[in-house]
Image (cartoon, rainbow, N blue to C red; front, side, top):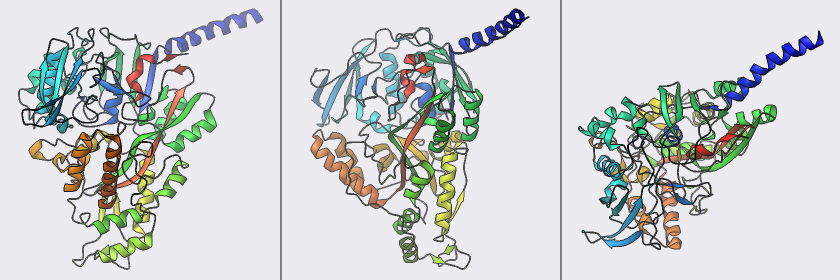
Length: 551
């Protein structure tokens, strides 16, 4: 009888053990957003970057040590190794010619080699003013490309910048697939194969390719047979989108997902609770980095055009209390967009402490009078009413919204909350500047990233440029424009630090944005998984997915 029971138990245990073992050749990742597009150069959205990083490789990338290295290229060009050379442009400017070679074995998933034809096509798309590509300044400055052969090419820029050999944003497009869709540049962003034919293997040349994409639900990745690098371990990776962070946590604990991406996952308070209750099952670590949570102010709104109102908004919220009470002090208050971890951070810039008395005084001076019901009105009888938007389902942001809404109400500012799914919020509302007043989200950047696309007046999205650019506030400041242009071309680090200090002072003084805090992303990883190393900057952990594997 005992022997029989042992046999039955063994038969029961075997399929269970086999199932668990088999499951380890597949990985299910939970994130909170679905990409608004899969096109690598249209719309800036971390969800897209996280997924595409497993299917592609940029020419250059910042590694975990914040060092610029080659990824798709074979050797990083420098002036010292003569692959980068100073030159005078046809217009008499101080330019630079930078030569790259594509990895000789790089091949699209349909077997077509990655070549300089793709380089030329990508440049063609980026150069067109109506293509909808975000980083328009990069393509404007890149005035010529010379293809030496199928794999080697030289980029000619009309200025020599301190980051002349960092071209991680120059994401290749497959000419043999997408060129026909660019016949009409205005409609290209709606016709690109990245969205019309997302599972086409020819769109990808990384360790994985997209095998299935269900909007708002999930993306399935399978190994790319033409990948030239280290063979990835997992036979299938499923990226599940669970917008509500409470539901995301529940799925993790129930086994519906294996891990939560630190880049787009749980709030700090949730991670702390999981660490206390389930620390034996998961490795949980908190990575501070260049992730800047803030509120964009639509400066076309006449209420927000008044700087006194902008000052009142920031003085009325207790950002230090938000950091301490909601995030256990792990997410420090931000005073500008530059993180103290970055070497160009300036300490002696204007800082706005919680001061509701001063906020009331500023609003009085701006002509907003408090009435009995607790809301301020102007001389025309119009209420001081604003709308704040962010990504729906993100518990952390929604909590912060509610705290700020209450604190603003205390000084007579009536702020209404109107949130949207991330795909709508980033895909249209923010990129087309359709938000009426306040938009809360995060920018994630690389080390010493010049914020030209977000602060230069030439990068304000509008219908005339097919909503290219990322200056979503509509900020216009001549001194800022000049600084952004000069910083890029200043090679002396000491001089550049001084310029960065001026930039941060203007930013803090003009206040086109309300800085909130620098995020510390909690990574929740099962203890059986290794190889995931957070970077703390815009290039996510998934860029090194081929290193992920069970212990």
